[in-house]
Structures are given as C-alpha cells and as structure tokens.
Length: 170
Picture 1 (cartoon, one colour):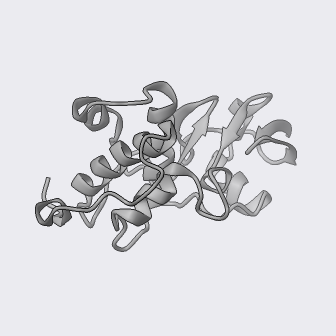
Picture 2: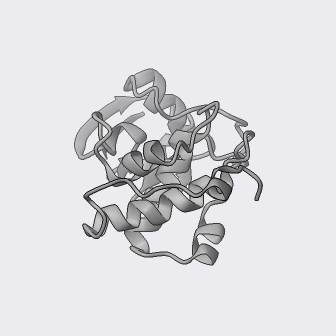
C-alpha cells in the first residue's frame, strides 16, 4: 500500500502493508532507528512518537493510519542535542540505560507543546512511559527545566541539582 505522510517535517512516501506497525515503517523503511521496540503491545512507551502532535505508541499504530498526517520522531527534535528537552535531559543526567529515553522525550515534547509550564500532576498524568531504571523524578525535573529553557528564562547557567534530586525513587 502506498502511503504518504510527513516525518519530521519532510514528505515521505512508502509502500508497505497498511497493517504494518508504524514503528517498523520508521525503522526499516525510513531508517529512523531512534524509535525503539519495547513491548509491542503499547504498554512501555519506548516506541512513542508524536502523531499529529499527540504522543502515540507506534508499535500498534497501523502505517495506513498516518496517510496525510504528520509524525515526529526523536530524530526530529534535534540531531545536535540543542532542543530544550535534550539539554535538560543531559544537564540533569536523566538516562541510565537510556533505552526508554527516546519515547520519554517524545512524550515530554507532546506535553510541553500542549502545556508549556506543566505542574507535577500534569507531568505525572502525561508521562505514562515505563523506565526500568526508575528515573521518574529526574524526568519530571528535566521537563520543568526544559520548560524554563524553552521560555528563555534560564538560558544562562545550568540549574544546580540538589543532592536529594539525584535519587531515582518515585
């Protein structure tokens, strides 16, 4: 099935089975390896992309559903790490094993696009990706920091971490 859609702002055309999960179209047909396979049943969030601006699990989304749509992957944030979320993630040492982080970042980017300065409760409600390393506190802190960076309120120096902020317990 011929399917045409935008990926990271660029028009793409693929010829894949319509029921093929978008995850495999992105990885195998378009060479975008940043979106990860985790569970294959829409539970873990490692495969999260933005589909028309909404955080969506690509492992269960048939490619036929993206006809004419806009899809953003982790590669679309920034290749050089300059996106506020990437800067905040690095500044606060969020990743440990890193496997879930592309999906975490894409969920966070959808959240910040809809809610530029989310509360802890809004972050907790939107961030339903699983992290085996349990970096949830640092993820929450990094989303707040990215909101600061995005608004230009904190471009100068990195925000110092308090000792208790480096713990991974929820």
